[in-house]
Image (cartoon, rainbow, N blue to C red; front, side):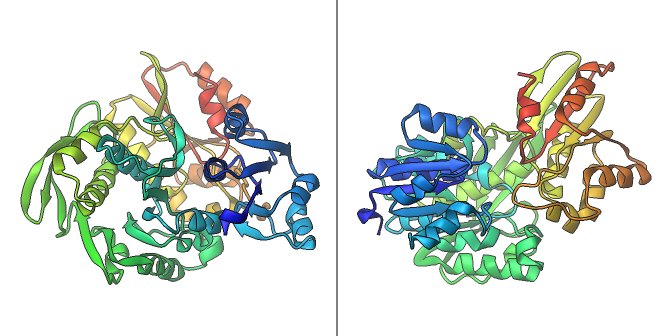
Length: 450
């Protein structure tokens, strides 16, 4: 279908995935038009590289000119350009549908899970690049190995994050399907964890007959998935094909462990990224490497060459008085993992600064949010980042701060970034680690300290 398209219009082109799609389309010889409600760094880079023509907010002109309209899941059904495209009977596709079409002739390696998708995608990409396989890469963050969220090649291998929201990941036919974990999230769409699990089952069912499913056997729901093709399991606690044993954590948080495959020791590896959760991500990476026939030594070399992802435990500032890190964590499990990692760094005090992401997630996981900040000494909350949503009565960061305080946590509410930034600058104690957390625009606060 894409072979006949001359011009595509991307609504929400500044999104990390949409900006990558813009580059893939342009590389295919398609003229790319784009719009978004704000002007961000992704759009700046697209314009600098002459990838797109851009309009702020909307453009009826672009709707008229294009052969196809592509929209991000954050776009409302009542978006004026979508409604105009329907009136003109233009073909309209979601971001996921177009990714599915871009990858239909590829050997797709799709990484799914509630947590860890971006880092694991980055680790796998690093291994394949280091092994000389030159894969196509579509990742939900800036991979520092390539200083981009996309890598385009003539290879038939295509590595992509596979997001479960609105069943987006069901658009892919996979050679390798990775399931990192299944936890309650996006309940505004799934409603129940049972529905979410059913969606993951459909995801692994989309793996080709001679393909592989790489599965976390320590995750209670992931281990219940029924697999019809080849399977490689990994774990720390339970029995599995791949196991991490003799895990050690140094004083600076770096982790080493022995890798066993089918009971036989393969060797020991020291991870370049901090955090116990990254042992699981690395094991998933080993599983993909084994499925592709890559040797242990090359997998190890590729993991060691991983340079990290922007907004994934990114050290913004470090001196004797304070350390500031930024992480994309926005789910309670992710927040707890990041704060536990902070504890390993031996600072006297940890202050978690959090911008909740969406009203529905804050409401649906409210009790988890009340407990996930336990490793922090203080919690500073900023207004909820609404993303695609409208406010929900009674759901606010202010109320969350009050509830945390009632439970005995030292919690504060800041109405904007500037007040929070000033509080960080004015903080008198030494030996404080500020963990700036969230998936919204809180990066502006974090990067203001660079």
